[in-house]
Length: 126
Image (cartoon, rainbow, N blue to C red; front, side):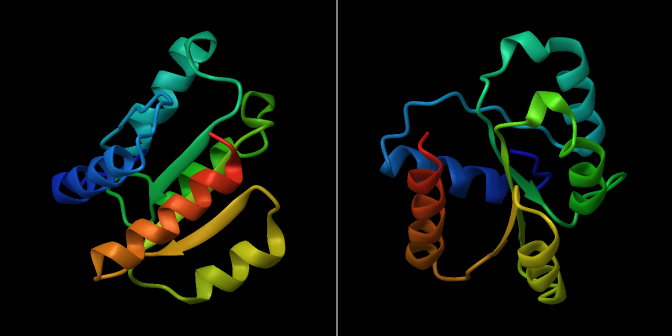
């Protein structure tokens, strides 16, 4: 997960806990930290990666992170999920241009957002 908002990280961890998620979870506060961790420790990360990225990040936004990452061999079996409560035009772009990207709108209702995250995780098979 690449997210700079501590409250959103907390809510996401609650969702994972409610789902009894057993996979590896890593959090990065910005895109540079994520890209550096990938460069430094590719062999420590799972082959199949589900990466939730906040669209509105400082330094590198979610699109920039995705564009710098998605075509690398290291992310061959990965799915990127751009998360935001704004920018509905990105939803259409993600549906038409990239097979390894989906857009998830942040819901203000926790249960609805939790359900959407659960569907993504289950469909990805993690």
